[in-house]
Amino acid sequence: MTDSNLAFARPIKLASHDASLARRGCPVSDLKDKLRRVGLRPTRQRISLGWLLFAKGDRHITAELLYEEAMRAKVPVSLATVYNTLHQFTEAGLLRQLAVDGSKSFFDTNTTEHHHFFVEGEEALMDVPVDIHVGEVPPPPPGMEIARVDVIVRLRRLPS
Image (cartoon, rainbow, N blue to C red; front, side, top):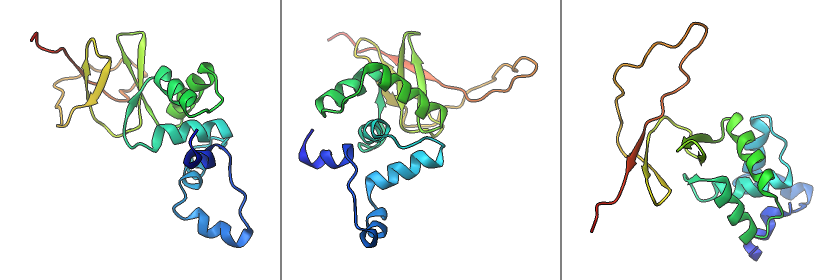
């Protein structure tokens, strides 16, 4: 972990008069507040993984890629912890999970309604930059409601 990232793995103790100043605009405080607002305790691992997830803006990531980033950043977590945290963040509404090819899941930090391109063979997921209007959606079975509709447009590169 670089020195600039070290502060995010280990919370810094501040004098009480400095705490109110640090809370405004402090990325770690903002992340802690975000976790508390959705009912998650801001543990060291959640904060570290949350920092890796959200500090780079909107992105699509798999558990394996996040685990690799955590290892490079010297964040001591297991792959199981990464999966559990991603699922907790998803259940709390902080992430959107997208199943691609049945066995591969991506987690999207952009939770707004939007759709995706998936580049086959490259395992890359990208936001579709325009609105897609879905025609008729079948009615849900009795006692159910449609939560959302995800459109994944599969792409492949043209032969050169």
